[in-house]
Length: 535
Ligand code: C2O
Image 1 (cartoon, rainbow, N blue to C red):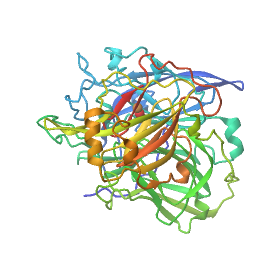
Image 2 (image 1 turned 90 degrees about the vertical axis):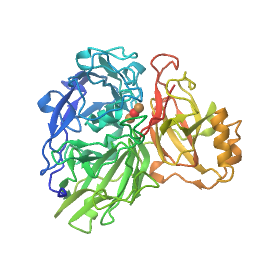
Image 3 (image 1 turned 180 degrees about the vertical axis):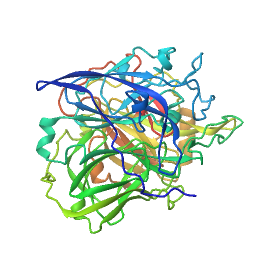
Image 4 (image 1 turned 45 degrees about the vertical axis):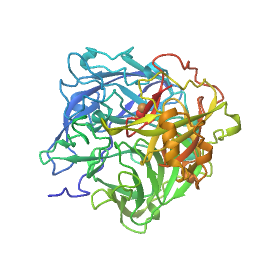
C-alpha cells in the first residue's frame, strides 16, 4: 500500500558548530565529519533504508547530515572522512567516465555549495578520495578543507561532488545544510531565531522498494551504450529533513525556514494549501535588499529560498505545503496525489506575540550594473546528438568537461554571461565562487532556430552564428524575490538568460584573491545533468 502522509514529525538535524566560543571570544574550529554506511527510517511504516550519511560517528550519522553553523569571519576547518564500504548501495554507470579507484571503494569529495573559498577546498570532482584516503583522484591535495566564512551571511549546503558519482552519492544521502551568520548585521532584522523557530528544510524526492531500500531505475535510456545512466531521477515520495511528508506542530507566530531543494531533477513550485504567504528574505547564500511577499516559489534543484511564514495569519488550523511543478520541468507530467504534497503544519490555537518584525529593509548589496562588466561571454547549452551515443550528452559551448579551460575570469571583476539554452529542459545553472544577478530572459525566435543550432554544432560560436538575430522574442521579467544575488538560476529552454556575474565579494569592495589558472580551478555546471565546465 501507499505510505500514509503526515505521520512522522519533522526532525531538526543535529547542529555542529564551526567555531569555538571561549570567554566571549569566538575562535576558529576544526570539525571531523565522516561518511558512513548506515540505515535511516524515512517513514514510520517503511523498513529502515540503507543509506550513506554524514555525521560525527556512525551512530550519529543522519540523512540529511548535520547542519553546520558558522560565524562571519571565523574560519571553519573540516576533515571529511570516507568510511564507506567497497560497494555502492545504488547502481552507477561505468560508461560516463566516473572516478575509478583501482582498488575499489566509493569515491567521494565534498563541495560547499555557495562557498567562496580556495580552489583546493572547493571539492573539485577530481579531488575525490576513497575510504581512509587509500586512493585519491588526480586533483586531490589535502585531507582538511578550509572554509573562510568571509563572505556575506546566508545559506549554503554541502554535498558530494565526485566525478560521475555525484548523483548516486546524493541519492544515497550525502547532503547537509551550512549556515553562515553575521550577528551584527542580522540581529537588527529581528527575524525568528533559535533552533525551534529558525529551521533548515532540506527537501528531496525518492522512491523506495517494499523492503525500504532506495529504488533507482537501473536500466539506462539506451542500455546498449550506457547500461544504467538516466539523465534525471524522479521519486514518488517527498522527503523533508529525512522524513516522508512530515508534520510539524507550530505555534501561532512567525517561523523562518531555509528551504533547500536537494533533489536530483525535481523542481518544486511551492504554495500553501490555504493561501498563506511566503515572506522571502533571502535566496542562495545571500539576503535580498528587502522582504518580498509571494504566494508561490519555484525552486530548482540546488536553489535555496529563505522565508518567513507567519502562522498567526493562517485562516485554518492546518496547512499543507504543496507543490504543483510538472516533472521534468516545465514540460513533463503534472504532479500527482503523492508528489503534490510536501509537509503539513498543525497550528496551535493560541495567538502568540513573537516579538519578531518583518523589517522594511534587509541588505543593500551592489546593484547589477551591466555597464561595469569587463566582458560578455556567451555560454550555450545544447544537446550533442549522435547515433552512437544516447541519451544525448549535454555540452557547454560544444565542449566536454575534459576540454581545456575557456573561461578565465579575473578576481574582482564583473562579467555579463549570455546563457543560451538550446535544449528542451529548464537547466539550473550553478556557478562556483562567483555570485550573479539575473538581468532578463529573452525567448529565441522559433524561425531560424534550427539554423542557429546547426551553425552552433559546426562552429560553437554564438556571435558568428548571429545570436543577436535570434534572441529577439518575448522577455520574461525576473520575479521580485529572485532579483537578489544568487549562485544558481533556472535557464529557461529556448531562451537567452543574461546574468551579471561578480567574481568578488558582494558585501565589501574587496575581492577574493584567486588565480584563474591555479589548479584545480572552479566549475560551473547544470545541477541536473552532465553539463559542466571549468574556469
Ligand atoms: Cu551544488 Cu558544483 O555543486
